[in-house]
Image (cartoon, rainbow, N blue to C red):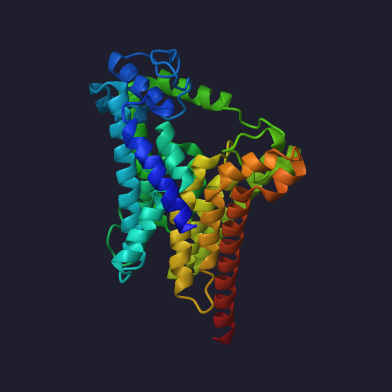
Length: 384
């Protein structure tokens, strides 16, 4: 798998640097939103048609438009290249920080191999191809999770939860990753204060009407609840709860509620292992309950797998293979779906979609480990 990722990374980045001036599909939207912000135009009710071959919908909060403004100083092609370099740098830097925090004695070659392999991870390369914000957000998640680890020593307590939750602030479908906030009042309080502060700044900059328009855009959705037969899925699709048919929304609500209650209950057991598994559980819940799951959101499995692998490494008979297998399954989502749909069998695609199994494995494993931690704690209490 490492060899496959490395070979694909070489091919992708050769093309990436060769076509550095190319207009990126998603970044083209961000670029135009930055222009609208400068010109005082409505962000959600102005047609996004200035640049050809880009998207036509903007689904981020108004305050995020401020991030795009500096890029408008460059032409859209070079600006997209700079944006991608920044996103890639934040992602890789965050990944290195997370690994070094969890495993401070890890050999440099191990960290280097992990970073090099991750550059070929297909959700990352696809995000860069489109000029998506996903690598930037997941890089911030990596940094935030690393800060959470250092929080136990007394450092970074004021900001660890805030940084780890930034992806959810930027894009609401990442909200389940905040499960760890329920394990500590300080984390939750500081994050709520940060969100409130950003909200007030956003209102001051863009006004009430713009935020109402944002809510209307979210309500209208982007194909929320849309059903497509598995044989008609595009290569980047995966639907982990497709089999729930008319009960998918109910299932997602129950999963989110269950994860929140479990995270809250876990507060009784303030161990490092419990904290890590709750963090990982929140991360893997994101692609499981996402309203529009696709290949890009699978990038969040990277920090989840690093956290789980590090924890398993220090347990008797730890299942380090499981997070590695999960990343491998997520990596092959595009060619596998393309191959499976060629058989024109809904059942085959649904049963063998590798990305869904990647999420199932990680989600189930985190639940199992949390349950084991609870049982161990109960046994200790019964002895006392």
